Length: 75
Image (cartoon, rainbow, N blue to C red):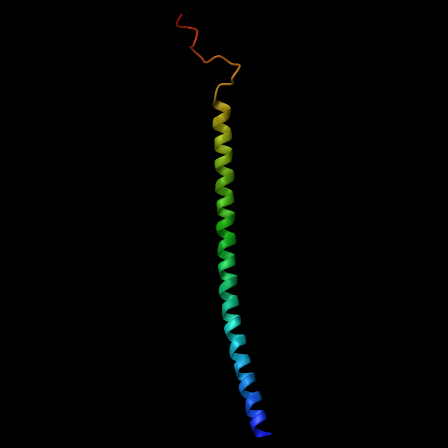
């Protein structure tokens, strides 16, 4: 009976140690996830900002049906 209790005690201690390891690992994963989400939000912001800048530049380009300024004036 004593050996069984010692065995159970050692198993409980091992489980407690494993739980602590998993809690630590979970904390690291949570921190990494938070950092990844923050980086993702920043990258999305930059992509949208770049998309808006490209759209604004495209608006400044002459349209295909519009003659370029100065193209026929030199003749």
